Amino acid sequence: MYGGYDGSATQFAGDGFMPTPTGATGAATGAAGGRGQGRPDSLVPVTVKMLQTAIAASNVDDGLRVNGEEVHNITLLGKIIKASDTATNQVYTLDDGTGTVVVKQWVDADDADASSRKDELVVGKYARVYGHVKQFGSDTSVVAFSVRPVQDHNEVTYHFLEAVYCNSHNAQRADAKPAAGTGTAYAAPSSAPTSAPAVDPGGSCVDQAKAIFEGPDGRRDEGVKIDVVVQQLNGRFTEAQVREAVEHLVNEGHLYSTIDDDHFKSTNL
Image 1 (cartoon, rainbow, N blue to C red):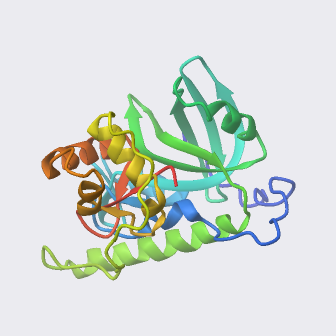
Image 2: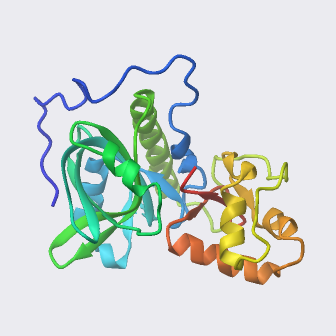
Image 3: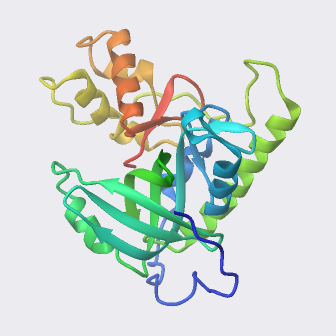
C-alpha cells in the first residue's frame, strides 16, 4: 500500500545513478506519451502524490480521475526501495520523493530480455513504470506492463516537469469544460512511412501490427497512424482487422494512443 512522504529523506541523492554518459541523447524517450491528454487510454505522467490524491477521491473500479480527467494508463518514475519476486510476479516499492507506491509486474516467460532487466532493477536504482492502477480488496497497487531501469538521471527531472505540465493542462481543461470534440493544446504532424520494419508475413495481424509500431516509424513522438500500418501490411489485413488488433494491443498494455484516435505508440520504445 502507499506510504507517506518523508520530507527529510533525500531519496534522490546517493549512488542510485551512474554519471550521464557523454553524448547521451534525450532524457525520457519513453515519456512522450503526455500527448493526447484528455483520452482515458492515453499515457499520463504522474507522481505518487497525484495517484494518492486521485485514489482517495475516486472509485478505482469505476475509473481513476487525475485533475478531473479520467485516466487508465500511467507512467511514473522513482527509486526502488524494496524488491521481491515470486514465480509469477515481481513486486517493487518505488519512492519518487512525494510518496511510495507498490508496483507489481507479472512474469512473462516468453520475454527473453526480462532476466537482464530484472538484474538491473535492484534496491537503490531508479525505474520507470508503465501500467495502470488496480484494486484487489483493500490493496491498491500499480500493475505494470513495463518496468525498465533509468539510464540517464535527466529523465527524473524531465518526468517531473512533464507530470506538472500535463496535469496542469488537464486541470485547466477540466475547469474550462470544453465542448465535446474540441482539441487539446498538443499537436504533431501526421505519421508518414519511412522504412518498413521487418514483419513476418506469416504472422497474425496482432504480431505484424506490433512489429510495425515497434519499428522505425514508431519512434516518432506521435507514434504510427493506423493508415500507415494498413499500408505497410500490403493488403494482408483489412483496416477493420488492424483496428481490432490495435485495440487488443492497447488492452494488453503494448500500445497507447497519442494525438488522436488514429495514432498509437509502443510502450516498448
